[in-house]
Length: 329
Ligand code: COA
Image 1 (tube, helix red, strand yellow):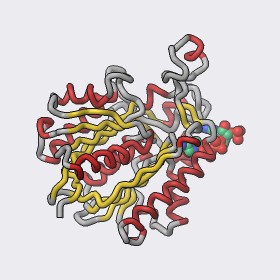
Image 2 (cartoon, rainbow, N blue to C red):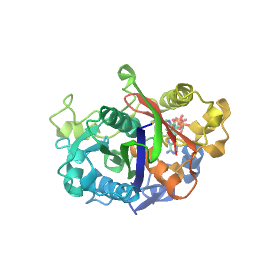
Image 3 (cartoon, helix red, strand yellow):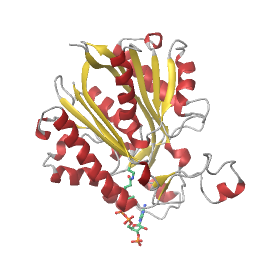
Image 4 (tube, rainbow, N blue to C red):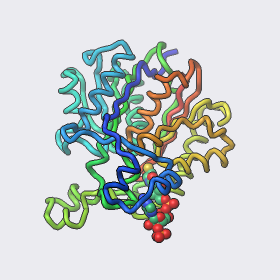
């Protein structure tokens, strides 16, 4: 029977590494020990100044297309999940389309913060099931480093830059997406936000810059930690129940890479062996929408994921947004 299939995955990380020790040396009031203990992050990647989100997405897309044995000319639809587009208008997906030289593809962005890749897969799924489009490129790309206040030790230690991508189709060949689930709670979306730059605070002014309104801000980090753990667990259970399987049947959990302690908690609560969480946050930090797309690609390419493995990708992000994908590799 025809179903939604992944034909290829790809990722791209900038080569510039920023370690916790580098942050200390920049004069930030923190230590490697504190950051590793409280988050699990040791280092993150930072995009070169001349690279925008669509540039990172371009390299990830090329890798995904190569794995799929396709060219950009085979793509009907490009969806980019991002909260750091090159420009508000045109979309990052439009810039990417031009760079990939894929004028036949329809393009748009999806904004769902750290859950963006799964929201992108969910949208692609609808178009493929409807047969509106045949081959969809879902890209998640972020240059989070440009949104950060490098003097704010609560936030700047967490994030990094990078991109992941997947080529999807409806068919019998490839790795089957068994389900995607997406949820939002707009009434409680104020905790993680970038207040400036939108219609609420434009035009951009000296005042808005001086007040730091254009930086990513976290109001209640502890609260968002607890909500994230709850939503991750709900998402895992929802994916298992929907597909009539037990959580223990799932071979790999590739979550949004927010904080290692979240997954230690979830491992205990849901009795999932911690080794089943595939994590890259130690070396890349939190790359918002791109985190789980990049991590999926790494787990595929290093051979950790074997044919027929069941993989759950639970996500949670600002907005609030959360959800999951379940894939039979
Ligand atoms: N280095 C050293 N000390 C730091 C620090 C840093 N980088 N950041 C904060 N601190 C200090 C705080 O100022 C506070 O000091 P105080 O007790 O003197 O006031 C102390 O460490 C504890 O801060 P707290 O915020 O309670 O730490 P925490 O254990 O909750 O860890 C986070 C902070 C941000 C790592 C954690 O709350 C978290 O990961 N939250 C989720 C955020 C997130 O990922 N949200 C998005 C999900 S997609």
